[in-house]
Length: 263
Length: 287
Image (cartoon, rainbow over all chains, first blue to last red; front, top):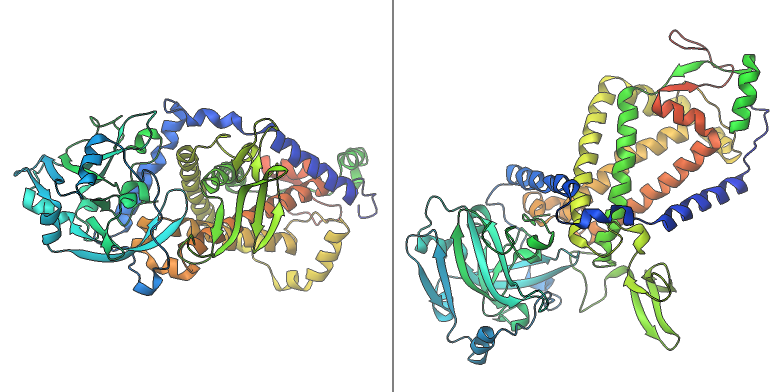
């Protein structure tokens, strides 16, 4: 057998391989474009993996496990603004024109004591400052110092009813004028009560800039950037998020992104 | 081995080695599961990469400073738009492939071209759905394979290189360089090292660096971020591991073609493999 002729020379082999690869590339992958359609059955099967990730991470990772906090010297650049950076809704422009003096953060839904807070009231509550890494779903990261009021304090003051399962954040910004839906997000009570989950009003030692979500932006440090809504005006406790937006629990979730956002 | 040669041999019966049962059903099923998983993981991964087609060293992506090791972008030049790829400070014109690609009348600013992404158009959300599904499938398959291969002896018998293998190393390299293959009962040493490299280095590396990109996972296992030198370094290593797996795939296919694609494919579908003449027969072999 070792004497038999090698019919496939190295050169032939390499060119055959290259031709094979390039024809695969030319064939393209629009074959799988149907997976981008929300009503695709196959897609809904694939999406089950996201539930598995959520359950697995909740099981493996302590509810109180903290995201890594960095030192001052690791803040090497400003926090990169992304998504909405300058909301144009009339309500928001009026508040901004008055330096948010008339801003009120409302707590509603499944709570014992509905109420609202002015920015000054939030600032006068005990604060938490943390230098954390912001991970955008696009893939980039940025380290910044965030200061704000722990959401758990607000929830305790409001008295969460036992049937509440989610916290829904309603925002002033409309990300896309051609698809006028207000930004909103939601999280479970584990993330809501996490010590690093804050209603941030400060960034890198300054007041939170408009581009980064003034006057209040939620920080949920164990999740991706889209889970950290900016320009928040109402916090609502709910037993389900099916009646908000398109029912998937957030603006980007309604547009095909996973709800958990911890990966 | 070529198709022509295989046919020639089936006429010339005494020149045939024994037909040996080489691949267990677990090995065969997991092999094809991985093939499917890696196909979808690669193309959905390139979709995810395209959402921010740059790689960095450290924890952060430098916007106010430069810590990028690779980036793909489009720039306007007097000759029109150009796709540029920068690797470790060296800039290349990659118009049509990286940075800027598509039909001449409809060029799109994108990292990898649409033929290499799922979906073909820009859709990060769907890319992530596909990627995480097949990531789970890959990990579960690896776990099943590892358990089965430990108990059925595949690891010890077929994959772990022996002392004799290592002695044969130079000769095996020379044989491969001459495309001269011996079809024995066991893998040759280069095969063993390549497969062990995939199972015990590249797969764990790509899974661990993938998990390191998860902010949730990082809170539970912060040492992973330390281990890889930061979240963005982990993302870069994830990409590098992908590149090495693609390189493995290309060599793997070339070797299958060179060593006799029908025999190799048969062994990975039915388990039965035609060994070289002169291979000592044992009980259970067929003619």
